[in-house]
Length: 295
Image (cartoon, rainbow, N blue to C red; front, side):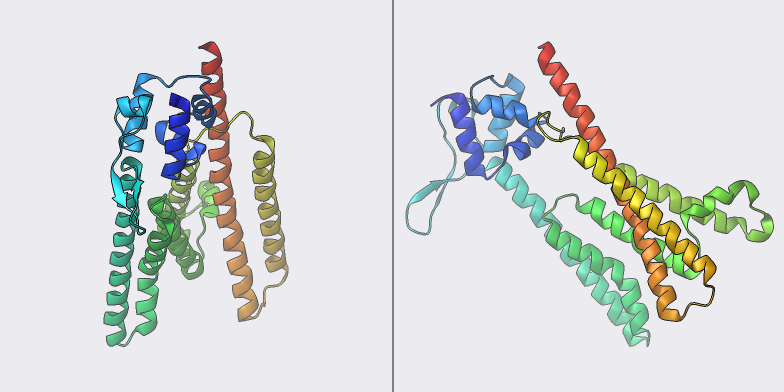
């Protein structure tokens, strides 16, 4: 059995796709494909990482496999790689534990405030912990911190929008702001903008290790991202124009328009972060392709 066939067999047994394996090794999916077809041979440092991923020594990786085994339910023996499996299970277990901790904290806050006569306040203050608990218990450990951060940012931003009427767009009035308008409000608006920008950038670089492959369509996702941002912006302009012409909306209609505007704003932020991740992936993929050609 060749080295490429062995890599392909161990990868499939591990339950990994070529893209997932490439992400773990810091290479492109095209490189993994070339290894598995014996079109090229991994460098020594990549062979060491492959051994760690599959839980095998270099000798067993090149010549065969010598991995830990576990008993199957039917009495037979099944080879089970231990490297990435253990790491993935540990990551998922940590995420689940964090989820249960968030859930307990949320329940305790709700119960304490409920006993004090503020059940709705308890739900309100416990909501961020409930949201983080759901994310941790369902994400499998993938970018849990990023999604929890987005959830908390959106909840706080919604409160500021609804409770104070402040949005990050207020920063455009900075040159014309006066002391009578309260500089603290302007400071809060700038904080909203900077925190939102931080999460947009975090989203953009969260997939930086996954290059966009040369054989993948690069124009379509970029076009869809830009089109989505333009559509959200046009819809927000329409809602703003509608509210400007109708000052006496009833409560439910006003709330619906308010939530619609906020949702469109958050969609624009997420789309901007996703578009940034696509562009970074394309740039990284082209850089690696150029490096492979020079080799």
